[in-house]
Image (cartoon, rainbow, N blue to C red; front, side):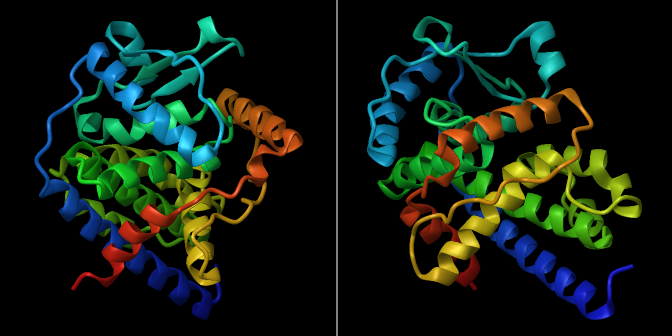
Length: 284
C-alpha cells in the first residue's frame, strides 16, 4: 500500500486532471461543427493537414496515404482504434480510421495523429504532434478542430488520471467520475478503457501500455514544458512496460526503432496545445 502522503498527492493529482478534463469536455460539447462523414471528406481534411504537419516538423510530407473508415468485420475487430499502416514506401501507406459514432467528433485530431506517423512511429511523440497541429487550426478559428482537439485533450487528461489511479491503487475517484457521466459521448472510449483496466487497480501496480504511451507520457511532457517555461516537449523517457501481448511487442519494437534512429529525442513545439491546456486550468 502506498504511504499516506504519497496516496494523498496521487488523489490530488487525479482530481486536478479530472477537473481539467471536465472543462475541456464542456468546451468541446459547446462547439457545433460538421462531421467528416466518408473517405472523401477524410482525404480533403488530410490535404489541409499536410502543410500544417510539414510546418510543425520542418520536413516535406510527400505522398499522402490512402485513408478510409473501417467498415464491417474490420470495424468490429478493430473497435476504437485508428491506425497508420505502411511497409515503408509510398503506395503501401494506408490510414484506417475508427468508424465508431462516439469517436466522430474527435476524428479531425485523431487523423492529425495518424498522419503524423509519417515522421515517427513513437505514439507519445506522435500524440503531441497531432495535438499541436489540431490546436493550431483550432486557434485559427476552425470549428472542426476547436471541438476535436478539446475532446482529445480531455481524453489525454483522463488517461493520465487513470495512470495515476493504477499507479497508486486508488480507483475510487475514476469510478465516481465515470459513474456520474455515463451518457456523455466524448467519454465513451475512456469509460470503456477504464472498465478494461479497472481490475488492475486492485492487483499489479502501474498504468497499462495504452494509458502509459497515449496519455501519461504525453501529459507529463506538457507539464514539464510548463515547468520549464518553454513551449517545447522535453525528450520523452523510454516507456517501461511488460511484453505481455502482441500489441506490446509491436510497440516495444517500433519504439526501439525510433529510439535508435534518434526520433524520440524530437522536441515538439507545443505553443497552441499549451494555451488550450492552460485555459482549461485557469477557467473559473
